Length: 184
Image (cartoon, rainbow, N blue to C red):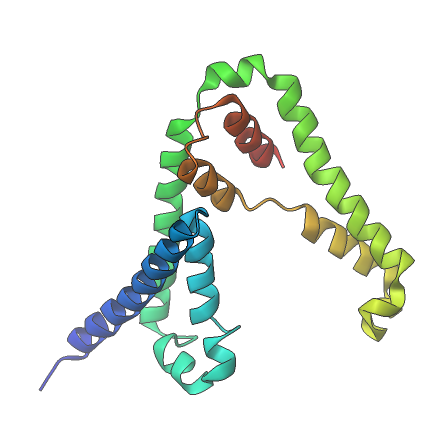
């Protein structure tokens, strides 16, 4: 008889294999379309996640990616460690000399990257409250603040990956964008 840990190891390997295959295939598809591979990798996650697989085949999704258990904890830990290493490598690419020269640009870009989307989201909710439904209307200011903040959050790992894919991370514009996103 097979041991439980052997089954868990195989199941974990299956999850990782499916995720890597989806990421690689969709990443290559985006590269063929002359887009950063990270867009395809994100698309692969959307296809395998609750948005597509979970909606179209909920039992298959629940079987492949259970919400609880040791394998789930291991998968989540692996994803966090991978993200940590990726951010470390992206940080190694940043040239601090550019940061010293472009401090004002970084601060200005950072402020605009927060204030503009936050203001637009907040204002849109206040100007068009009927679009957001009854729950939003009950707590209009709180909901408007939520939408504003949600729109102004930067996805630092995605920004870093796009800059790496486009070979812009060492250029002045790449350093400015990455530093501003870090400040945000």
